[in-house]
Length: 86
Image (tube, rainbow, N blue to C red):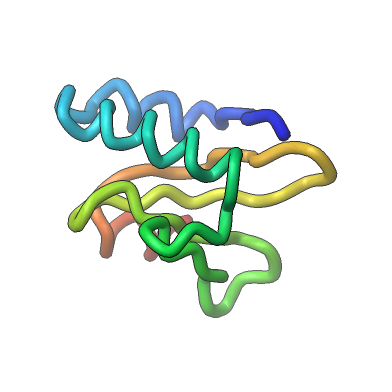
């Protein structure tokens, strides 16, 4: 599997504190190896067809889609605002 980053994801990444960037790197490694790993708490976002969320930290989430052999990284940020606009 590979990652494809949307422009929105890239912009959100640049605004992250360094500590959260490090946590994100670990979360993405885990996502690649086992997207069902319990600490990620991956689940489908209610009201969407195919958008998922994963936990980066207690306060941060990332949203993504799965397309064939790619994870499309859609959004990243604090829990509530990110999930309102996945």
